[in-house]
Length: 213
Image 1 (spheres, rainbow, N blue to C red):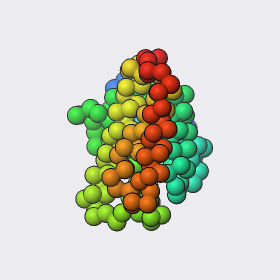
Image 2: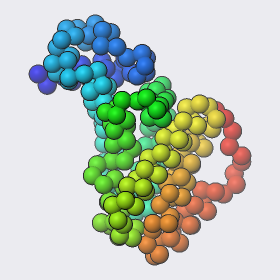
Image 3: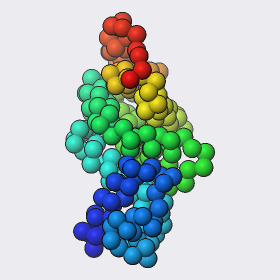
């Protein structure tokens, strides 16, 4: 059963890469995976559940490869962000399809939640981990949710600009770090704000205006 599920998800990932969510059909997945449509529904329940599972599996594997452990310092966090951004560059078609879905007002909630989890990470997201490691101040649940939303939305907005060709690859990597630091700065403990400011200043060094890819 597990082998069949993995094979279906592998074909679903390839189909998403080629056709995006809008072009994804159960009929075509059934043909490619060589299983009956009824079997697909029995295993996953719905098209939306298949898409969500395929997205989760694809990016979870990517994240495990480039960010094996949670980062406890700002510098370590930026290393992880750079690695994720560079890995995303190798998945341009897939990433383009995903951001189009994320910002769609009609996206199925299960698919949106899957994309959100990918960017946020497990549990309370970055903010929850940062509280435990004393990087940020203690937050009320509402503020923690706001910060997580800010980080996730900025991340996908950056991918959108890059996927549309408005910025190049290197600028995409730089902005991924800048946007993250800008989002979290107000929540950092005072002892870490100087470090964040220094990292921002380093990223903002003028080495040429960003240009489209």
